[in-house]
Image 1 (cartoon, one colour):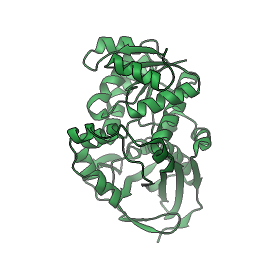
Image 2 (cartoon, helix red, strand yellow):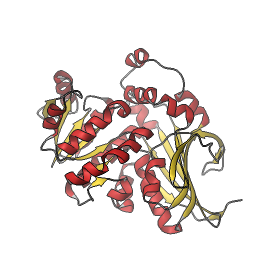
Image 3 (cartoon, helix red, strand yellow):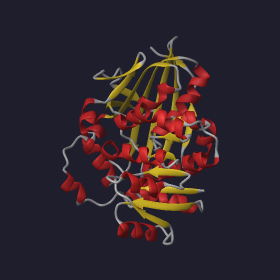
Length: 350
C-alpha cells in the first residue's frame, strides 16, 4: 500500500504524515519545494520516505509524481484555487483520491465535474474527509435508516477551546470569504441554492443552553442529500464564532502567524456537531457527535479513509463518505480516537 500526501509540508499535511507513519504505511510526499519536503519527512520521523517535486502548473510532472500511488491524500488548501488540479492528476494517475477540504463550493465542484472521469478510470474520489463532514455525513445516513424520508436536517457546529486556525485554514477562509459571509449553499427541494435564509436562529445544546446561530457553508449540505432522502439541509455555526471568522485578514498577516495551534491547545479543544432531523410527521431525531482536536481528527479520518480505499472495493466515481464506507463501522473506528456519537430518541417538534 503506497499512499501519497500532496501538501505534505503544511500543518494538516504533517499531521496526516504522522498518522500514516503510525500505521506503518509506505508514504510518498509530493509538493513544490524539495527542501521543505525533506524537512517535513524528517520532522515526522520518516526521513527516507519517497519525495517528489511537482508544481500545480505542470500537469505531466504532477501525474508522474502521483503515478503508482494506491491513494492520494490532498491536504493543500485553499482547495478552491488549487484542488481541482490535484483531483484531475490523481484520476489521470489511476489513484484513488481523498482530501481534507472544508470549502463547500469546491466540494460541490468535485461532484459536478469529476464523476465521469473517475468512473471511467475505475478510481474512487471522496472529498471533504475532515472532522466535520465525514462523521456528520456518516451519522446522517444512520439517522435516515431509522427515520425514513425526512423533511429537513439542520447541521450545527460548536467548537470550544484555545486552539486557533492553521495558516492553511485561514487562507481557505480568505479564499471563500464571499461564501462565508453569504452563508453559502442550502439544499432545498431537490437543488442547491444560495441566498436562502436559515430556518433556525437558535439551537439548544444537549445541556439545554440556547445559542444564537448563523448560516455556515459546510460540506455536509453538499454530501448528505446525495444519499439521504431529505427536502431541506442547512448548516449553522455559533454566531460569535462565525463573526470572528469574518474578521478581515490579509495574506501578509497570515504569513506571519504560527503554522497552527500547539499540540497542547489541540488537546484542549472540544467540538460538538448536532444533526437535527425532522420527518414529515414532525418527529425530531437528534444525532450528536463529540470529539476533540479538529486537526488531529481530520488526520485520523483521512488516513482511515485512504487505507479503506486502498484495501476495499468502493465503487468508482465521486462518492460521499457514507457512500464509500460503512457508516457505523467507520464511526466505530473513530471512537478509539476520542470521538463519540449518539442518536437520541424522537420527539415532536412544536
